[in-house]
Image (cartoon, rainbow, N blue to C red; front, side, top):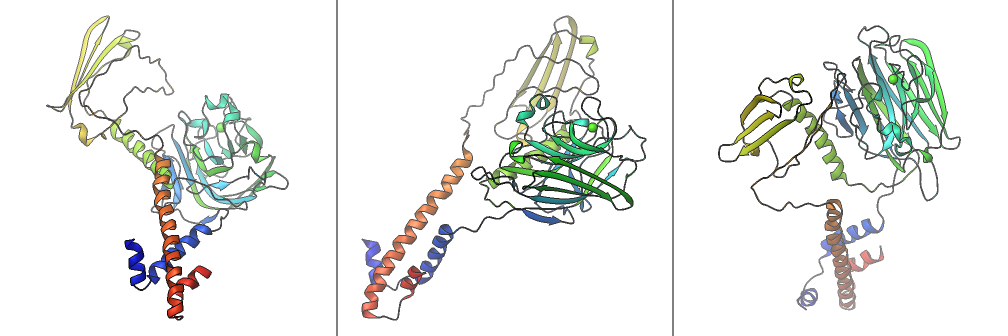
Length: 441
Ligand SMILES: [Ca+2]
């Protein structure tokens, strides 16, 4: 009632009408979808178009994929935008072409004493570096995922500088890998011959012939490497993929750097993604790395020897007292009188978020041991109910959709009211027709 009164008693809000009409038209005709195309001649440290995982970092305008001050490292750099490979409703495939330049520096090591190479890959958008993928696994597939190749959804162009007898052909090679670390097609190649030389790779896919092609040339060498693979990408990849580079070192190392990268594909489409989720993924990865670096040095410790207690059952008690902010460890053994006691002053509020997960981790390296947990109990005192939101993304979308729906409905109502008013006014004053003109456009 009050609304009607104000409309009839004042001038129509023409500016508001214009804004609401634009909002309405935007939702009726969203911006057209486009295929992916980009050209990067320099990887700026502040740019947000590349997602870095593991060791990978921007480095003087390049991407450095691995650290070389430690062994067995992994790194990945992928583009923040995804590529539509095929359309499930029409079965249409994309064409794409990508050019990138890179350097592998074997640091003067002799053949067989450097490794393990770079891969340009296309894979599922939610793929992150799997655990245990240093060395010949090239930060892509581990011994678990290799057992189920049909679940992997990955195609890679590998520049493999170390021949792993478990899955590689003899000698270094460049070629294609499909859901596996074994090359589907390859040619022999040698990283020592081209160490520090700028490699220029072109990888292209032609939808009409279903051929994937690699051409590799070098700035200061006449050598050229060319490999092709017949592959129907629809049988390997999902509709949308992420693209990028991975590299790994093992006990043999080398430097992997990507200098430039361009890409273009033809198939259009609009991916429904939650941009916030991607940002979080990147944040978590970076945090994870930092956390590992910060925690590998013991804050407090006592000497202890695993071989003294091998196969003996260890009983560990870890407690935290809020009043003293002390964390205590008491470690005893079933068959030994030795006891280990460590205390650590720590304000957990400075280290941990409100809610945490608790558990155990273990790892083996090139030397191994067996680690087993036999029993576990836990109790804490602080009460509270964790606001777990498994459908956070959906709620976010709903949270936006409802007000937008209300906005569009309000736009309709106001425009309709204004039309009524304008028509009424037109009978009295035919000059003021803005509201009606907006309706006609
Ligand atoms: Ca290899």
